[in-house]
Image 1 (cartoon, rainbow, N blue to C red):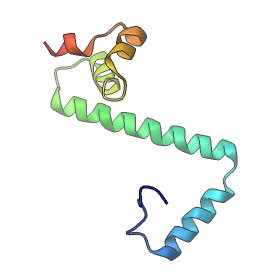
Image 2 (cartoon, rainbow, N blue to C red):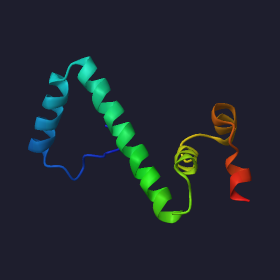
Image 3 (tube, one colour):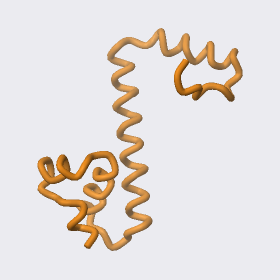
Length: 87
């Protein structure tokens, strides 16, 4: 398999994990992906807060989002230019 992300996982544990994933409904799988995505966004926001305690909540959100989205998307979606904000 690509990525070999499981190379340090006991094969028995990996089998249990894969079987548990197979038993999930499509809705449960989507919910899990969305939950993980939200978790990762919160981690990014927490990191921005740690690095820039002076930022407003809007600046925290935009700075974290700019780690995932390219400059043009940030400008189109949020009217915010990450490069201009850094200067």
